[in-house]
Length: 139
Image (cartoon, rainbow, N blue to C red; front, top):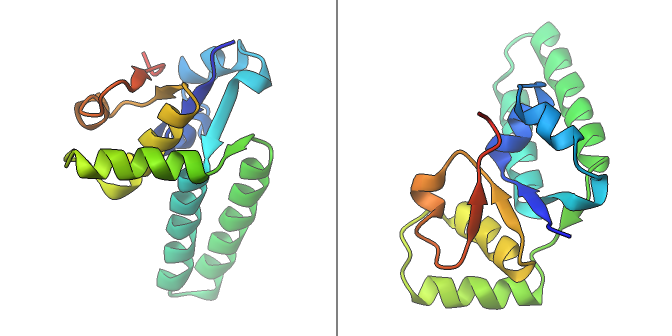
């Protein structure tokens, strides 16, 4: 069985029902798909930033609704953690001075530690990580 990890961008597209990504995801058994704890962090930070920036009660109410919907959606997906194995991979990649963002490097570390395929449109950055398997299901 191949494990596919959605990066934050792929998850956002899935949440919006973008095709052909949605159909491809639905064609796989749920146990073949996962997200990382890093993606959860990124999504929640984004929602919390929206709440902080809300300037009217109506907008604040909408932002809290979005936060709740996001939490509900995230709870339905298997989560891969930044565990000891991923941390070891992360330290190794840091020592190689791979030039990608910190959060992306953490997501890559989790994918490598799970021998998983990372679903992303950001192959320009993620392809810098040795041994990381990538795919893009948006086309």
